[in-house]
Length: 326
Image (tube, rainbow, N blue to C red; front, side):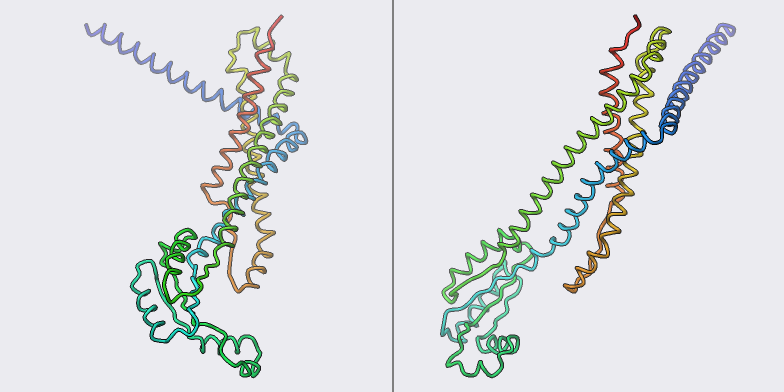
């Protein structure tokens, strides 16, 4: 019984070793073919750099546009929170009625703050800012109305909510004209939405071009190794073994192209940073461009590698199968 048990244990041990050896050999084979495909790129530096450059620049353009759109969204993120409604009160309204309106508006849940500007104070401010000086004194009467400035709460500061609040304020009997300058904001958001769609469209077109370029490059590599592929098929090499070097070539193209795109984006943002800083200083604002974050960088590299693998896979599946020993 003990001898039988030992025999079984020995068989199980040899089985484990064989599985482990198979796994190690599979890993070693992949590493060898990956390094071999990288060596082929190194032995043809000019052709490899041209392909990597096309791939990198194709990814640089949509990546840079994406960053600029995101930075624009960051700049405008807080603008809608500053929405202010101007209420011009009816002519010759008494100060008592104006104060009643201000008191009533302060109780509304949609309103954050209310500021009352009497007509006389508005005229003095206009006289100071306009530089007309004593010319204002020759007016027979104050042409400016009383004004109430209403700031909505954050919840009601969006263009649609602020417009609904404006319609409600216009119904007050003390209000003659209500004004909310958000049309420009809505147009800006529409432009940003168009820019986002345009970035996506350009990105898709360039990505398709990358797949086609890599696919054509791999096709040329397959044709150059036509005789080698025929010999491998004659000696019984599997399709996976034959396909693997070309797939790794596509992987290296994608990875190196993604790294080139990353460096290109950094250089472009560095080049534009001083101009944008100068422009922001003209408006007494401080703004720094937000570049590629860690997750965005990994996404860009992953997408680049995926495009390389996709282009090589399409070419391998189509052209290697057509090569058969005669």
